[in-house]
Image (cartoon, rainbow, N blue to C red; front, side, top):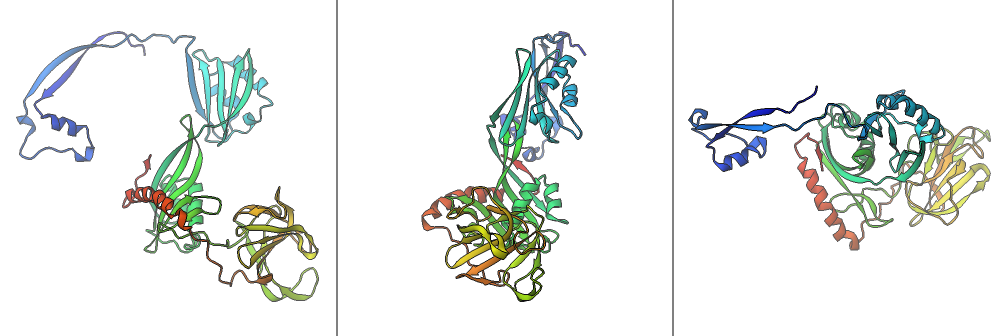
Length: 431
């Protein structure tokens, strides 16, 4: 529709409402009301008519006008289908597909991400921007009629998201209802994994409140960051945690009073696995065909599954050793050490004397040595002797050092205030 220049008459009602009433009317909606014993009919009104002019709007766009258009990637989309929806002219589509045939990012389009196209009003393609990963931007520009790609680091803006929800069936169902990403739900489960079994302990009307980071670049979401603070109420008991980082040794999740939530040792060196053989003094060995002690725990897992260090420590061995096959031994604080056997390979850069953090990938599940199939043989040792890791009382995590307590308190106060803002609400806020 083409709009022509016209004079339009506007009707303005000016009443005798006091100035403070006008200010209030533009404040919070919930605070708006009418004073008692005043009726609308009692308020005198004056009618004023003003002549206003609308600017001229061109009937056809300027051919030299530069536009930025965007289109979200859908299932089965290709660069060609996206350019077509962006109304790029057919010649530029053909030229782009020819020049971009060796650009890998154009063949790895992620559903839900966005293409940004710089075009003229007549559909000429000037540039195409695509965030190929959270940390990298791909910009394909037309230079002398040829499309060339330039990659550059993404300049991230970090926003703080705040969400709350109530459990009706499962953690993931509740976080979905509250528009919380799955990666945040996984972090919540990991943070409280030592206190709450999220498969068996959840009850209806349990609730959560979470404060987390989300990353943006040029106004487009590029990824989800770390949970900064979280509260979970399970069976009427409240659990709270905040993230704090002072150095490599002191970083992770703590209770508001500074207690370290991280255990000194992880429950398992594998994220997803099942125990195929436990610690026992008498087991029939499937390869040697005789009864002998099994002084470790076997975790069944596909070949190549990443193996994690269960605690901070230093590598004392990464070698091939008889029935153990490829073996890694890590010395931890005090009398403790752990061993990881039957590995298919070691992590890149792993060597004797290297310092390892808890949760770091050290190798991959295999079947080297005396093994009938791919699995991890894990040993927990005290003063060099194997002990049952499922029964022994594990050492406590290193507490927060006294020198970092003031910084921890300064960091914790605003995070706790954000959680308090979410109390008794199911609302979502964006900072």
